[in-house]
Structure formats: structure tokens, C-alpha cells
Image (cartoon, rainbow, N blue to C red; front, side):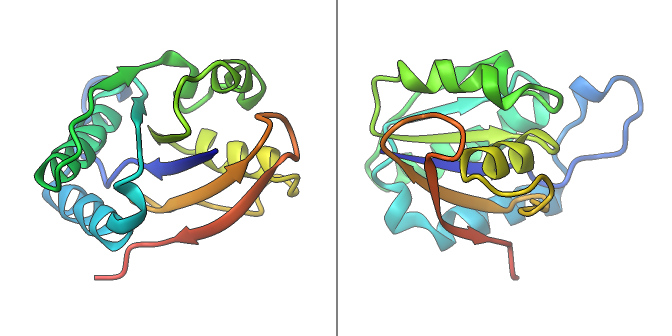
Length: 157
């Protein structure tokens, strides 16, 4: 099984609440570039899971739209288990019961970095994620130190 971990694109400064921050135009362009850079692998994705925060939802929508343009039609599943301060341990239970062999997460720091580190048995902070960065983890069991980091890609435009 595999999980793609995508950090949301660049977001506007916080003017009201952190939850309501939108992607900037650069953020949208960078997310699209990140997705297109890994498109051949992403065509296998069966589910897209996103944090409920606006910038993660917008990131997931970009992924969904690009996949749809390439013949893959998916819905976005919203889960509060992958918000910025979520605990990766709590998320493993959800991942264990997933009905898909390939999932993409649209989420935030510090969750994405902590999740990759914890899943792959790395020290905390070993895999920092910039905005629009994406990683691929292969696994047989969704548990601490059971994942294999296949790659971590940063946007280069």
C-alpha cells in the first residue's frame, strides 16, 4: 500500500482565523506543478483525504481536478485527523481501516513532517516539508516505523 503526503501550497497571511486562509496564486501554481511532476504515480491514487482547513481543501481540489483531467475521478474525504497539530498515532488507526491501496493526504506542517518521521522510524525533524512538497511512503502495516519513504520532492519551477 502507499500514501502520498502533500503539504498544502503557499497560503495568504492570517487575517482572521488560520482555518480560513486561502492559497495564493503562487500556492496554486506550485501545487499543480508538484502534482504534474508526480502524475504518473498519482494516477494510482484511489482516495484523496484532506484536512478541513481551507488551504488543504483547495490543495486537494487541485489534485482532484488534475487527476480528473487524466481520467481519474475521485471525491475528497475531509478528516480532522490530519490538521496541523494532529497526532500521527491517532491517524494510523484510520489508515489501517482504509479501503484503498493508494491514498493522498493534503495536510499541513507540523503534521506532515511528524507523520513521515514517525511512520518511517526517523528522528523528529528529519523530513521537513515545504509548501507543495510531496512524499511517497510504501507500507504493509500502518504503524510506527513500518513505512518506507520512497521519495520526498520539493517544487522546482
